[in-house]
Image (cartoon, rainbow, N blue to C red; front, side, top):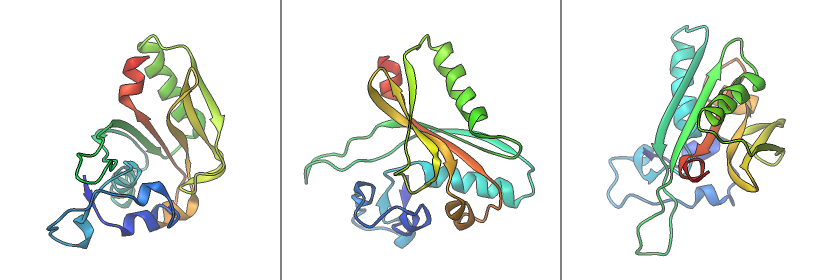
Length: 171
């Protein structure tokens, strides 16, 4: 859950993005662990990178983790739990979408829709979508931008989905 500000640059997150508004650690061990994460995509890309750079031809991973969203100064942050899915190697967007659809089907959730999102700089333009249950955004799915993959030393297409669990459970 501890990370450093450099991760935002690796993910191509703009300087004015809300994701850069972080809970700061008062006495960090170093710059790489000076803030609490506001997205779980970087840790998934790190895990995919580890597998890729250890010559694994493919990987399909998931992580259930907490992100930390600051609130009013002096108050505890919001701590939503996120399920993050990541894959590379002989897969495409529809393989990732199929995993989400199977999860939703097993949970008896049928009001799922996907809306194109070309504004998220971490994902490939035109290959990213917001995931909605009814009319509520619950997450993002897509192909990682090639520059982000290169920042994590991966020379292959990567797909990531980041879904807020509490919103799924409410559905």
